[in-house]
Length: 369
Length: 268
Ligand SMILES: Nc1ncnc2c1ncn2[C@@H]1O[C@H](COP(=O)(O)OP(=O)(O)OP(=O)(O)O)[C@@H](O)[C@H]1O
Ligand SMILES: [Mg+2]
Image 1 (tube, rainbow over the protein chains, first blue to last red):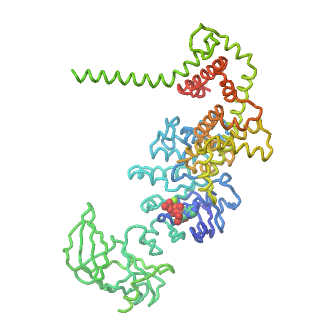
Image 2 (spheres, rainbow over the protein chains, first blue to last red):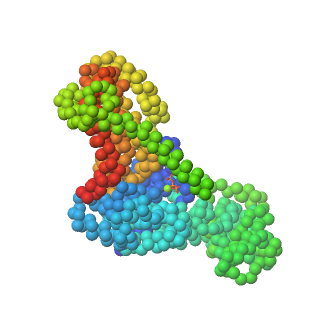
Image 3 (cartoon, chains in turn cyan, blue):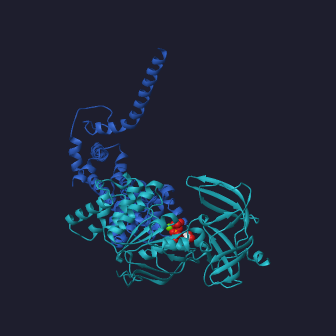
């Protein structure tokens, strides 16, 4: 399996006037891969896709598709098709007309067009809908027409801009499965944009997390979730508890960190004593006990416990007012308003180096200790 | 019981009221049609002197009247085509591009529409005289295009409201160039607005009197000719031509309303 980079985005920047929307973005997308660009609203996802499709020009940097520089290529010269966020179906054409449009313009024989359209309609499970007009379709059906229309040209790369955001939860789940199935079956490279982290985690081969025009981290879903590289990634993907403080002791890969409410530990390489760090611990990794655990001195008061079926969610408040989220399999209930000690397996904590743009406000207080 | 009675009364009153309105609207038209078959020459044709086709025969011999009618048709056709093309391009351009002073230009568009036609007529005449454009068909076309353009722009712009530009991107995305995209996507989607604008331009041009009066030179349009002949009362052959135009328009309206044209097109 030689899965080389099909789309290469190299150090692109995009300015709208003085607004720096995409910053130094470098990203390789492999052939046949399902890559998701994940980020909050306004972080530059759509702009990035539009630059790959050719609707916007990067202010600087280069984009290659299949090894070819795209700088001089018009959108209609690129072997890339797009599923638009708004579907962008042609309102004056039937479903058949919409899907056949690209082929008709290429003057492909009528018979072949008919066959290919019918095949792809079956593929997206819209057989029998070919004579409907777009206005007569539901959101999910429109979306499938948009996908069929983009797929019929057999592009090397399919760009999808939040294609499911307009659908209700149930249909969205169903379409997620269908899209994934399609992608595997056709073996087309997908670049998929979403701001829904759950969607990204469940569908992608790899996830690229964007924040403020910058790429924060690229990795497989497990890596992104379990080993976030930045504070933003840790908080954006899934729920987490963040502590900020200073490394107080290093013993091999065991790192102790002094935070405002006490001392905590984790396991990590490459940290020095005196260094500023953030520590991320997922709620389901949090433990509590009524007696202190070695290496941990943080203590809090149980504030709330919510029973949600299989798990029990609790909130423990630290003396400085921080709320810590816990999630445990439903079992014994904590004593309400009682003091508890918090801890975790050191390998369950994720230590994160600070980035220039991140401010560690808690540092001073921790240092005073 | 009384309820029913008053209900019946109300209905009857409504019917009479409607009848009066329709009479008011259609009686003048009926008079023209009837008189086009009325064998009387004594103006103002108040009495019925028997049925005749004479006026239609006379119409065919009235070269000046027919000529003016031909002029009007030509003028309307040319100004409609020109103003539709110019207006559509202007509307699309004003929709797509941002430029300085756009809002001013938007607002200025209303001026030719709201100023009294007589002012527009004098203004155009002055202009044509200063820049030495010969008064005649050319100046008429220029004048008609001038007052038709804003109406085309308004119509197309109404259609552009809610027009999703991403369908053009979708077309290019599918490998279709800009020009083909314009003809296959933009134009068909805007067609109802463009068609409406063209129809409006045509009707405005075909019965324009005031602006034409100032800019026609020696060329006579049908409305001008009618105005002229009316000084001595409506000539019976004008009645005949009016009736023919009426029949033609009504036929056109009926055809479009009944969707016949659409059905014919679908068959094709
Ligand atoms: N044509 C434009 N002109 C000026 N600024 C723009 C333009 N398009 C986008 N922007 C700005 O660029 C930034 C990134 O926009 P973009 O559409 O890429 O965000 P996004 O990540 O797709 O967000 P969302 O999830 O809300 O779709 C935003 O701040 C937006 O205001
Ligand atoms: Mg977007």
